[in-house]
Length: 106
Image (cartoon, rainbow, N blue to C red):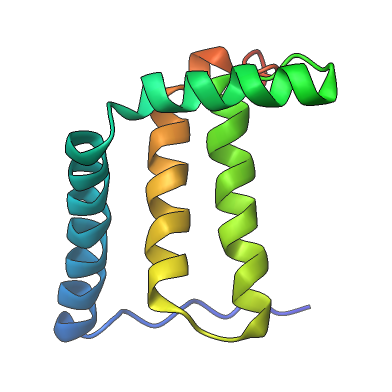
């Protein structure tokens, strides 16, 4: 197997990536003001899921599973909102990583 380096992205592509993450950041802020901060909202969801599944569920778990849900929806084709939602949930999961069941694996 031969490794071929990934070519550098053109400058406009860097701008597209930056704009994408800015939209994700804005999405997190909008939802936090519309509902409540993500850690609180995901903690509430975790309690409901924990009751339903009878399994320990953390806000981190909820953020990861919500990202997976959004990724699964992409199997039907490109949906910009699903991509942005998935990235936002992963960013939130990163902020909650101390609550992971696997926090000793870096």
